[in-house]
Amino acid sequence: MLVNFDSLPETARIWIYQCNRSFTDIELEEIAHKLTLFLKDWTAHGADLQAGFEIKYKRFIVIALDQQINAATGCSIDASVKFIQELEAIYKVDLMDKMNVSYKQGDYVAYKSLIDFKKMAKDKAVSKNTIVFNNLVNSKAEYLEFWEVPASESWHSRFV
Image 1 (cartoon, rainbow, N blue to C red):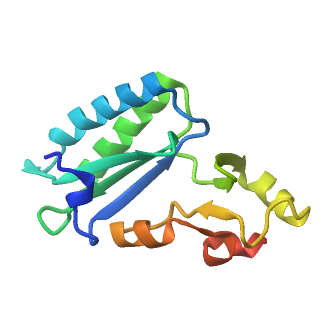
Image 2 (cartoon, rainbow, N blue to C red):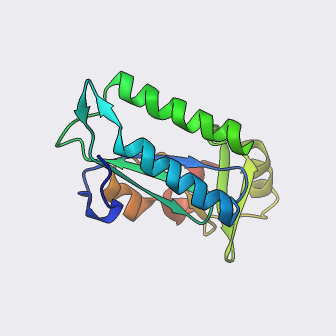
C-alpha cells in the first residue's frame, strides 16, 4: 500500500539506491510512476506493506517501509531488488553497487568509485568536512539525521 513518504514513522525501514548519474526529468517522472505502481501492490505473504518513496537530488531512490504494520520478508525484499534491477536495465544505470561514493561539491552531487574517493582523500581533494551520503542508514530517523553528513561523521571517515 503506497503512502506519503512524509507520513511514515521515524522507525520505518529505509533502502537507498544511489544512481551513477543524474536522472533526466522524463526519467524521474517515469520512475516515480513505476515506484507508485510497485509500492501500491507490494506485499509480504499476501499482506499489504505500507511504504512510500522519494527521489532526492535526481539521483537517489529512497524507499521506506512501516514495519510496525507489516514487516518485509525475504520474498518481498527479493521483489523490491528485482524491481530495482529492472530499473537498472531500463535506464542503463547502476543502482545496486554499494562500493561507490556520492558526495557534494557545492550544489553538485558527485559520484566516484571507492578507490577514486580514497585517492581524492589522500590528495586532499575531499576532506573530513566534505558532505557525503551515508547510504547505510537503516531507519527513516537515521536517514533524516545521518544520511547527508560530513565525512568525519560517516563510515567515510576512515579515508579522510
